[in-house]
Length: 188
Image (cartoon, rainbow, N blue to C red; front, top):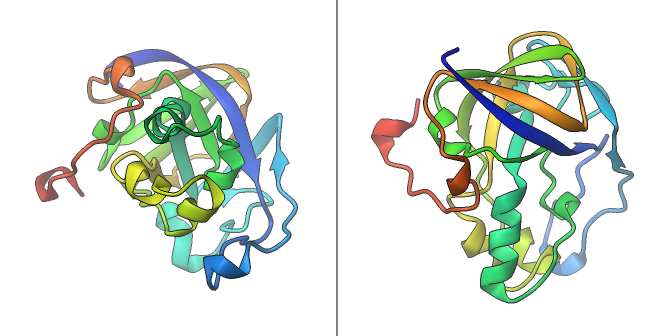
């Protein structure tokens, strides 16, 4: 990996069940979610204990990485918030990382002395639930900055706190909160 960026793992969401299904007007399911201090990741399966772990339909997108700056920008644009990051139902919340350029590439995160390799396969598109859970207009505002859905390539652990992101492509941390228009040529 050519580029190295100092980032922070701000939150690590682990939830054993889905909370958003059915109609948003009916409200979310009561689901226990944990802001873990440390998570174990298993190659090809995801985060141990999470709802997508080992599910065949989600192997290529078992983990969602999200830039905290995106959530902060959305809150500012909507004149709302601050938002509870867990309402987005993403897994790994980073500060200091532009994520969209990683699409289609392998990258790595190192925290607590361990390195985990991931493949950024596709954008994490927001769902209509965001209008109910965050604020009216959040679904639209989150488009192009909902994070990236990743496949876990190596076993390891991540923990909250200082971390390093290793990227094969240049990133601009100042753009972490910006919406990105994804062109078909940028997708895998």
